[in-house]
Length: 121
Image 1 (tube, rainbow, N blue to C red):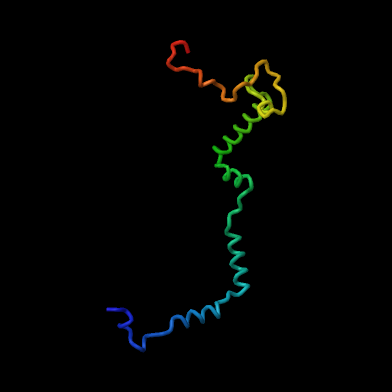
Image 2 (cartoon, rainbow, N blue to C red):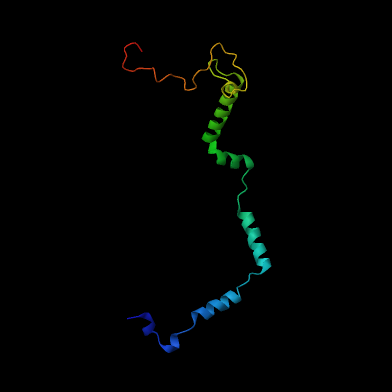
């Protein structure tokens, strides 16, 4: 049986008219009540120091340790690079190479002539 058939004429009401009335007259909160609620919420919020927020953003003590390690390693490699590294400016052609060898291939190996089946290499 359909729901509309079960209702009597006395039980029916215009739901859309109620919605229109609610949209036309939305309930308003008093401004002093709103201010008291916000003040109460601020007193309940924990005060977290900046250094704890930063540590939480990087992953806690483990993340901070990894960040410090990577920073120190990057600084050390930047100040004292390994001997066999190529200057990035040479790769882009900004400066001439001062190394004893010339860069002929940026891939590092000549894969076309390297034979895995040979017994020599």
